Image 1 (cartoon, helix red, strand yellow):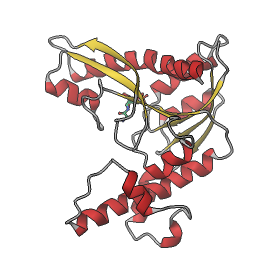
Image 2 (image 1 turned 135 degrees about the horizontal axis):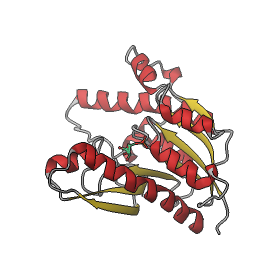
Image 3 (image 1 turned 90 degrees about the vertical axis):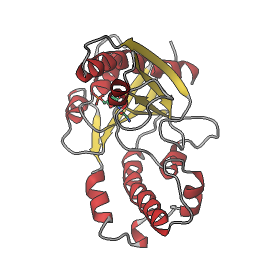
Image 4 (image 1 turned 60 degrees about the vertical axis):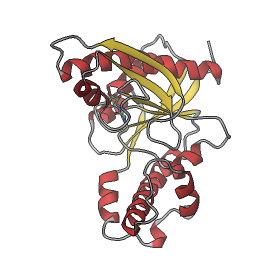
Length: 246
Ligand code: GAR
């Protein structure tokens, strides 16, 4: 057995991965992994995953990303930005969007994106501040994280502390619809990947993967069902791997 690690979780939706982690971590009396979930945060109010967390006695909070981004569209006052926000540093590090230096529109868009996300990310960090976590687990969190947020968790160089699950066999099919992209490409094998978060989108070091066969006649729903079943096994196993190496 490893030392029990303290884990925070972020979700956006139904939270079936969260449920798998709760169940493995001791939602039962017989924990299968050495991890304790301290909180579940969501970028969206009212999602089912929040109910799953509450039912398991886990603290919850919501940072309403859609509302924040909408209000940023009315204009972002300098004072609304986190005091330690450094656009130059973040622009240099981020690998989420490509910057066409010849286009002022592109520059404004990227800066809006990074500023509005940092405002939301600061609110996440404020909620997380009172918990001392060893690992942050993104369990169906459908937002990218910018260097503003990542640098405040990954404080020791080379030590990754944010884990994500992606519904495809990376490096194939990064982005928002891994199973859909796998299915539409006509792949015969699909899969899921758990990886650490770095400054790119779905580019960080891979921790574990599981694959499944896509058979003739399978629908996209079949692919999603097969994939999720693999995810529920893979994610707790990867958290345990982290705990054992911690
Ligand atoms: C899962 O399929 C997960 O891989 C995916 O969202 C789903 C969440 O399901 N995550 C991403 O696409 C992250 N970019 P869940 O809420 O039932 O766990």
